[in-house]
Image (cartoon, rainbow, N blue to C red):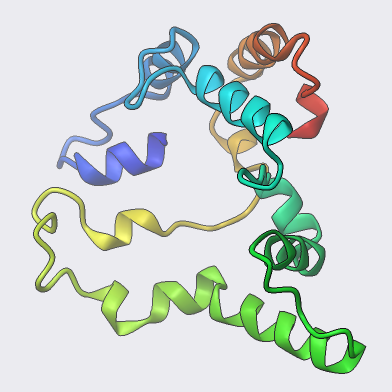
Length: 166
């Protein structure tokens, strides 16, 4: 989120939103679209109430087990891959390739902001970064990370989710 906003509001003097300010806003629930944890918990709870309608996916799981998660998504959409292991694996690999961050960011349509009404405000490049897990360690101080961990534990308490899930 911090990278996204600073990409949108880039200035010659550096980031408009400091990491300290971003953490303060995040922990205070003052971010676009409302408090992060409220959104996550409501989505999680709805996925428990109506598993046939809401699928709860975690980015970390998608990175750790991409084939399994793509199969899970396909089953949820009632479009499971073939039972033939060779054919099913080939189809899963094709989906992974087609949806890979590296491929998507290199598509011509994503390189150009031409014809995009939001282009002056939100360049397409702002939607693509590294696509890795754990990059926060390069930006947050240990104190910031600890504060977010404590808040996460507090907000997820009693939900069935835990910090270990992320």
